[in-house]
Length: 420
Length: 111
Image (tube, rainbow over all chains, first blue to last red; front, side):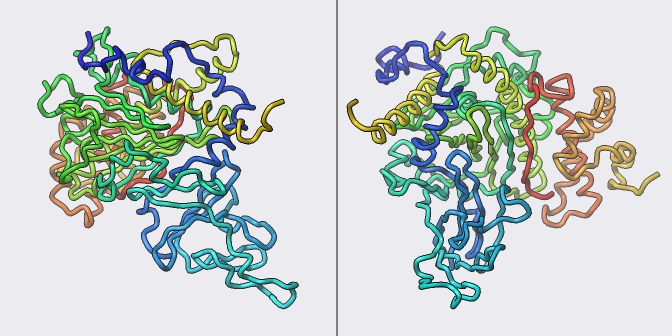
C-alpha cells in the first residue's frame, strides 16, 4: 500500500496534466535522424555542465571538453583576472586544434601562462586574445584584434561551470535553471571536494541511461542485492516520497534510513565493519544550515534528492555527500558516461576508507544498470514495439522524453519555412 | 619470500598481501575478476576478522603522513572491500547481470 501521499489529482503524473498518462514511444532513442536534430536543438542550445570551479584552482588552470554531440571541442580556462571563460578549441590561423596533448581527440587539462598552437606557433592569452604571430610582417593587413579565440558563453552556478554553444542563448543560466534547481543556492558543494571519478562508454542512447537513474521502480528487480538475502522481501516494491517538475528539469526525493539505527542483519558485514556502504558514510560532518530547496517535498526522514538538470546532468544529493552523472551522446546509440562521488576531504584514514567503500559500492550497482543498456537498445531498435506504458513511479522518464521531443519540435518550427 | 609489506602485527597476512596489496582500483578490480571465488574466500576469511583492528591501526597515523607499511595495509583493506562485494553481495566475481558493462575509475584521492 502507498506509504507516501500523492497529489490531490490522485497521481504525480496527473498533477502535471501536460504529461498525459498513455504509453510513450522511444523512437527518440533509436532514430539516427532524431539524434541529428537533438544535436542542434538541444546540445547546441541548452546550458551544459562541463565541470566544477575546483577543476580550475588558479589563474592559468584549464581543461578541454569534447562535446561530440555538438561537434565541438571547448577550452575552459581561468584567466589572470580569475574569471572563468570558455573558447572553441580552434586556432584562428589554419584551424588546428589549439589545445591537446598526445592525441587531438583526448581531453586534457593543466596549467599554463598562454596557449601556443603546435602547428605554426601562434599564441593566445588566457583571456583569448591573439598575442603572438610568427613572422607577422609576412601577413597581409592582419589585425591581431580580429583573431582572438572564438568565445563560448560560459557561466557558473554554485560552483558548477556551464557553457552554452548557442550564438545567443535564449535564457541566461539562472533563468534556464529555474527556481527548483536554484533552490539549491547555498548548498555547500564547494566543501565536498574529495572526488572519485568514473567514465564509461555505453552502448545505448544517452536518454536510456538517464532513465535508469530517474526512477527507482527497477530497484527491487534489478538490484535485489541492495538488501541482504536473509531479510530480502521478494515482493518488495519501491515508492518515492516526492516528485517535482520545473520547466525541463526534474527532481525525485526518497525517504532515508539511519543505518546505525537499523537491525544489523539489514547491513552487509563490510558495511557494519566500515560504517559505510550503498548510501555512503553512515555519518558525515555537519554542513551547517542547508537550503530548503534541497528537500522540496519536505520529506521526513529525508534520504536523497536527485536533481535531473536538462539535458544531461544529474546531481544526486545524499546526507553530506553527492553524486554527479553526465551523459554525453557520441552517436544515436552510444554515449560517454561521466560520474563522480564527492565527499568532504577525509580528516582521517577511517573517513578515507568510508569514502572508498561508498565509491566501490556505487560502481557495483551502476554496472547492473549499465548491463541492461545493450539489450534495451538492441530490442528498441528492432522497432517491434513502440508503445511503452509507464507507471506513476516513472513520471520523470515520461517527462525527459516529452521534453526532448518538444525541444526538437521547437527547433523545427523555428528553422523550417512557415506554411507549405 | 619477497620483501615484507605489512606492519609486524599483521605478519600472518604477508602471503596474501603479495597478491592483494594493490595501490589502484583498476588493479584491485582486475585481481578480483581474475580470481576464483575460492581464492577470494581464502583472503576474506583470513582478513575480515581483523578488519576493524586494521582500520584502527591505520587510523593512528595522519592521512598525509602514512608510513609505507601502513599504506600497504590500507591497500589491503581496499582489496578486502573489493572482494567483499563478490563474497558477501553477489556470490560471484562480477556484479550480477552487469553483462558487458565497464565503468573505469579514472580519479581518486591517494592513498
